[in-house]
Length: 359
Image (cartoon, rainbow, N blue to C red):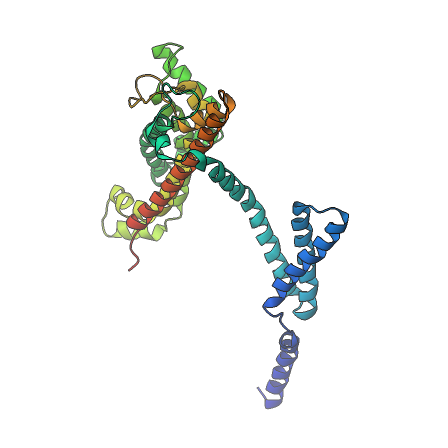
């Protein structure tokens, strides 16, 4: 290549890169200044026409997005402006999705702290009318019923997922996948009616058992465990399986020692999600487990109270005066949220302890 040709190519590249180099960049304080300015402008307009906080937030976000896009287009170019616009839209969508969660947490915590005391955790409602009492019986019932449901559902769900991913072929695998998909969309009331009909065949139509509630919850929990575990097992690289087979490791041992430990973090998260899915169910437990004011440690004998049913009854049919019943309902909801939070923390701890070591 001649010197003239090489020089011409360099000049052409320089001509192409020069517009990019000439483009400026907004200072770091510019987006914040635009955001504050948007709130000031919209707030001033609404102050004269009729102030509204939701309208202030929405109109300010729209004005901020438009102003940022226009200014960034002039200074930085269309590509950077589009990037900033998409970032604003995604961030706004995230904040909109986060708003109900934050609102629920603030509401439950604010109302539930009124009875978040020692009496609530060591007293039942037996013989209590009006103030006093607690949800000790409902906490015990929730833990026992959900624990039994987990004991039944987790092994069945894990083994089903392992079969579908590692062994399942043909019509049987397709049929299992189809029924799992159908069970995923079953309403909780249907699961409760199924459990009630099943136990009514053996114990009569007036049966109310904590174990029946566990069976109803397991119907809802199994498909979630199967689906989440199946997806986690599928993302395990086949190279790991092939390397184990090349060393002469049997398939069952490869699954136990390689596949499951590699995906244990996702499996633990899926199991936690399944437990959180059923621990707050009210309709099936109201049908098959019933409600009692005393403590029952035997899920195979008599009615058992649970936190969702306790909160529902306290809020839907309070006594006189209403305030003590409503306070207990909010505290029961707060305790239920705390239990789900603890389960998530335990799942993360399990995933951290049993995940394969990278070093």
